[in-house]
Length: 446
Image (cartoon, rainbow, N blue to C red):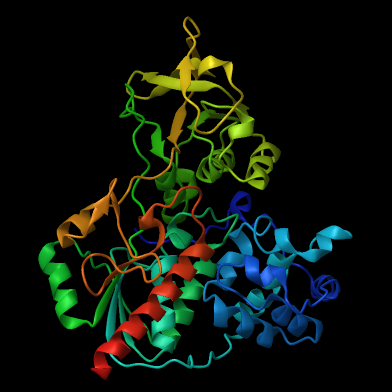
């Protein structure tokens, strides 16, 4: 499916950019700490005081260069990174007022680069030679590919889609990150010299063996799969969506063609559920309800995501579990039951739940959206014969190498507990790139 650049006002980016004056004034609030805790809190280790100082002096190009040197997806991360829990949460200014808005300052620098041209990045000091294949053009794959290319390696990236960016391109709603941002980042990486092979699926043992035979190392960055089914009756009715499929449709189809109806119900309460719910509102649903089997204290979404959903008019029903989707060809409602913690304990995301007898009722709905996480991608690892544990590939924690020599696994396919982030995926790629470089250098020295 081809990508659609939406001009619908409801899908225009909700957070406005800082003006030049606002950016300069906010940058001056930075204390430029020598041992800056914000750097330590950034998974990719961006020199945050350094890029902010460039903004103070009016050197936005230099600011962008500093950001991209550490995080090639700096434009995306400026918009969707959980800065409140990372760099801004560690800012020393929380002690006397409020943290410096690092994310918005990073966006100011990256928006300048998008508008006026990307600064040239220097080669990395550690250099090697050889060829590496990367399977998957999402954040982790792009992080590895860009780092390896800057180290002197020839890099081939393979992706089944027609455009790069992975979840950034296809799975983030446009009003959080416009499509132009992720596509810009792919172009930046192309300019570094990375070779992209789009529309190519690596789906057989022969495909994988060919890559191993023609490359010195293979990086697998395939992410996760679809949203799991709810395993209840009625899931195949018209009007039932996978949350990620819905977001993708808003980027690959005319919005007027997406039939949402007046009443939408979202099952799940993580960050993806918030995206699905706010999408439904913007697509015309008058009432959108998120169902969660626990309570607000156990909410998996970031707090700012929760507040964003409420500001959009989304309502929540706590202690509610769907048991069936009802309808005659198309969704008409959701049957639910009330839940509670066994033993009457306080709320917990891991405590065992029980169903309250006689609590069944029906919620009217025209659309139901599944948003209960993502399935683990196991097929490629099984084809490769890599060691697995609980359906997840096993990697050496420092190098990301799998049990198959010369094959590395990075990003969301590692299925870490908690919410995955783009910035951590990029860092995975950088670390794997360095591990590959050192391994190849040792091999060549023998």
